[in-house]
Image 1 (cartoon, rainbow, N blue to C red):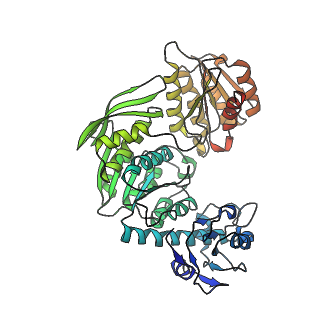
Image 2: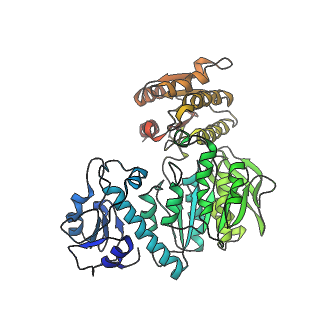
Image 3: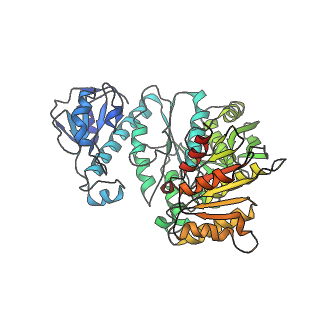
Length: 489
C-alpha cells in the first residue's frame, strides 16, 4: 500500500481515531490475519465464526503494526469505522457477523482501497483490470497476470480471493511501483459486482461466460447475465470491454457499456480469435491467434480446450496495454497453472495420472473438465478414464436435473468409470444419470464418502489410468486426489 497516516486513513473511511493522534504512518501491508502482520502494517479486525479479530489487536501492534482498522476502540492505536445500515450488513456474507461490525469494517476497507486505487490511477497511471464470468475467472485472472508481467509490475489475488474481503485486500497490495492491478469479481446477487467496481474502478473489463453457477440464488441465466454485465457498465468512456463472442449473453453486453468493445473467441466475427485449434495427448491446446495487428502461434501448457477462450481474453488485455502478438503468444505458451486444485495434472510413479480440479464445480466447468478427461483418454493406446465426482452446489430447484444430466454426459463421453461420491439426491442423480438405458450400470458406482472412494480406487486403479476429481468446495473432494498422490509419495 502507499504510505498513509492513520489520520489520512480515518478521513478515507469516514472513521474516528482512537488511542492515537493520527500521526503514525502505515508503510507496510494491510492484513486481516494477525499472524501475517508486517512492520509498519495495518491490521484489519474482522469478527469471524470462531474468533474476533478485535481480540488480536494488541498482539498485532506488538508484532509491528502501527494501527488497527476496527469497529470499536481496542485499547491500541486504531481507526474506528462508522456503523453501516442493516441492509448493507445483510448484503455481506460474513460468517459470525452478528452485530454488523464485520460489514462495517469491510466497508471501511473498501473505502480505503478506493482511496489508494484512485490516487495510484491519477498519479502513477495504474491500470485496473476486472475479470468475471460463471466459470474460468481464476484461471483467466492468472493468465492475464502472466501475460502482463513482461509489460510491468502486476498485482493479482491469490486463488479465488474475489469477495468483499479479498477484493479490497488485493487492491491494497498495489503501490507506486504497480503498473497493473488484476482483480477477479464474483457475485452472489444483483449489485455485488457493481459494488466491487466501486471499490476499485476498472478501466478494462473481461466477461468470460454466463452459465448456471449460483442459479439457485439468481433464478435464471438472464439474471446472472444482468449481474455479470455490471462490470462493463462500470467501465469509463476510454475503457475496454473484452467480451466472449461465442456466448450470446456475453456478446450482448456490448450495448451496456460506454467503453470500446473487443470480441474474442472462435467465431468468425471475433476480432481476436483462435483458428486451427488442436489438442495434444494431454489435452493442451495449440492454435493460431488472429488479431487486428498480426498473427502468432500459441501452444498452451494448461490442460483443456476451454482455456483457448481464456487465453484469447488475456491476449486482448495485453494487446490493449502495449504487447505485440508475438510477445502475447510467447507469454501464453509459457504460462503455468498458478492457483491450486484447478486442472492440476500429476502422474504417480506407477503411471496413474490424477487430474485435481476439485476447487469448485458448476455444470459448465464440469463439462469442460469431463471433455478434457475424455480427450486425454483418446490417445493411442487408449487409456482408461475415471471421473470421481461430487455435488455441485447452489443450483436451486434445478439441482437434481443438473446432476442427472452430468451423469448422462459421463456416459455420452464414453468415460470408462464413474465414482459418484456423497449422500443425498444430487449425488445419487449423477449415478442414476450415468446408469440409464444405453450405458452400463457396472461403469458407475455410488459411494458414501471420500474414504470409500479412495478405498475403491486403490483397489481398482492400474498403471495408465487417468482420474479426474471434481466437485464443489463443500464436498472437499480434493482429499481423494491428495490420497492417491500421497500413496505414491
